[in-house]
Length: 93
Image 1 (cartoon, rainbow, N blue to C red):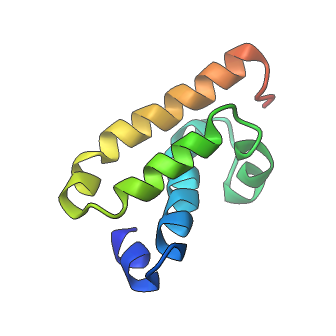
Image 2 (cartoon, rainbow, N blue to C red):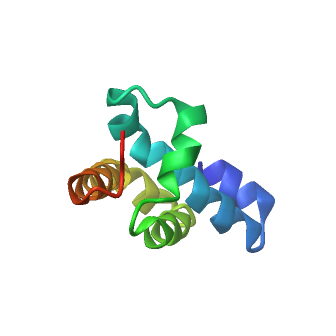
């Protein structure tokens, strides 16, 4: 992810890194409910807090060592975000 973000340069790297991290870190929750990548597109942008999560993920991709250390935290954050939305009824699976 960090190689992708740094190779594109400019503002495009963090934006694409943020979108990629949004899908990557919500995937464990979605896959447990049989939502593969194609089906995930319809659900991930309906989550409350997806924009902030993507922005934070895009910023984290710019910092090499912090990026690696934050991977478990980001997976936990994506899972909690999906679960809270499912409990509130915004994520219908």
